[in-house]
Length: 505
Ligand SMILES: Cc1cc2nc3c(=O)[nH]c(=O)nc-3n(C[C@H](O)[C@H](O)[C@H](O)COP(=O)(O)OP(=O)(O)OC[C@H]3O[C@@H](n4cnc5c(N)ncnc54)[C@H](O)[C@@H]3O)c2cc1C
Image 1 (tube, rainbow, N blue to C red):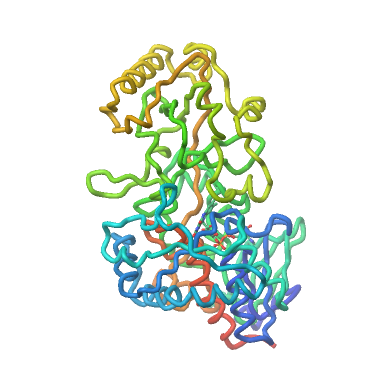
Image 2 (image 1 turned 135 degrees about the horizontal axis):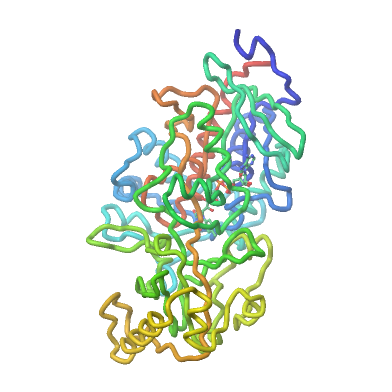
């Protein structure tokens, strides 16, 4: 007897149940609702309403939506190598992406926002992350919705509010309810505080619960990294991956050749669950980064942001090293402390702590010194005590760096002479650098309709997916491609889920 026949103790029903209220959830719900205005669409979100929006809200708000389809196909395939998307999935993604501009313009202006082109390749930004790749000429602009911060998110949040879309906050989806014989998804179990209930989804469920950035055990087990922290919402703890596994889904993109969105140098302090992204393009240069062995490990002033924390090694793009040398430390002098905040932006704030929690890093870094996040060390011996690294090694590393600075040549890592000011001290100032991430890509294997597939390539009936959970980013990442997945697959999944014939009245 199937679960349908047995009946289930449903506490409520909707036609389409969207799990997770970030951009993918918002777009899926909007498209479902616009496709069929009679449909009852419900979004279930784990976080309290004031913390709605997921990584989408905290993000840089860059969208990637070229219009040259053939060039975009070539560029995308080069970035995805060696794990290309199946042809039909790639074509479905292209269908959506190349027409996004018109829709974004309309949606933005409908709520008093502006869709604009950005990043015209000035010194602080880059247009094309991999210009040497075939098809890279498709990237003629990046875009966003203003005003920022959170412009893209705010626009689509407003659209949800304007529609008859229901929302349920502080309710974590824990398990999909399935027919035990066919695996058809009939609804979802949700926990709100101590209350557990089952919500019936008469047409379908769209999984949009984001990634596993804030789940260190998953990072260690699935990514093989030591300590990695989120720059986004604390709510993204890999719940979607767990639900997919229980539902019998095949997984993909859990670990790509590179960490698509990059491992960023960042600071993690006990008072905040998310990390602070270090200013990605520094403006003063009297500092070094050292690994646990007390030695420098990279060209510290590489503008990582320009390639999402990637470096070209032996002709291949790989991750910048920060995730693999922890614990690592930044050592700077007083001039560097005074010059500029270690956390800051060129246009608008990004990251959970700044955008959502409103933390303002002080201009001279003294507030953070006072908080004990940055340590003042009045001797090399004091740095040794602070970091646990041998004093002699530290002394040698600093002396060698200062020698390279004086000569204007960094023989080991090629740091440019103009960005190698001597490290004057004492006092020295020390802060631990942690690797932090903006996204993960792992999730259910999808088909061109946004449906989740099982290990035999069969559709799990009525189960859809969009956004970062299973994003169509199998390796390298061009800026904006994550929000674009929310928009593209949000369209596909929302449209197809609402078209399903209801299994119950
Ligand atoms: C600092 C930062 C900068 C970034 N900049 C960019 C950028 O400029 N361009 C770009 O393309 N990408 C960027 N990204 C990545 C991008 O923001 C994300 O990949 C994208 O927003 C993911 O959207 P989503 O809707 O899939 O997930 P999210 O927006 O993260 O939303 C997922 C939601 O699901 C909820 N949830 C989790 N588990 C459950 C559960 N069990 N039940 C119910 N709800 C649940 C979460 O609380 C969350 O609200 C950035 C990310 C960060 C953190």
